[in-house]
Amino acid sequence: MIGRLKGIICDKTAEGITLDNNGVGFEISLPLSTLASLPPTGQEAELWIHTHVREDEIRLFGFSVPDERHLFRTLIGKVSGVGPKVALAVIGAMDSATLARAINEGDTRRLCTIPGIGKKTAERIVLELSGRVVATGSAASAPVMGVFSELDSALKNLGFKASEVERVIGEVRRAQPADASFEVLLREALSVLRAK
Image 1: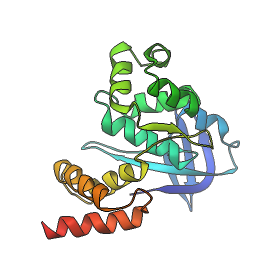
Image 2: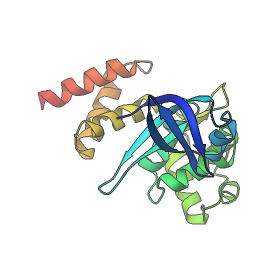
Image 3: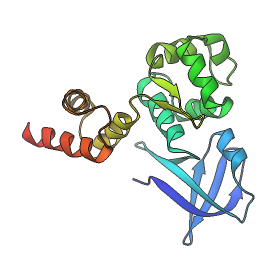
């Protein structure tokens, strides 16, 4: 799984960029906010990556900060009907502090201003994520359970079933302190899974 990429921007489109890393060109889809913040073609950029694997394709999605990637993963993992394209539109449409406020206040009207988001999708986003996203000091939006979202993704990428992962994460959350690091949580989760 690719988590971060650094390289030279060799091409830009409205959907994303091609990033040259040691002679390999990675096509990366980006939210508009990240695309706008990048330097011009020919300069170096560094992105946090979500590797999206489906039966028929592997796609890379890039973000300027890890918190945006957490929010992206939360949207596609927790809200039914929200895929990567819609999640990118959500993240790119408004600054993350405004987005967090809209979700937590149940402001579906504001969410409906995002291209691709209708009333039902906006209601699902509020229902599933209200109280789970916060605006951090860096004005980036991150799930309160950000580290657990990472853990969920890591365990699924290791081949564990979603039902097993959900159960184990619940056990780990009860057993570990709220400020436990990802490494500690992963070790604990793997230990629980091996013991079953």
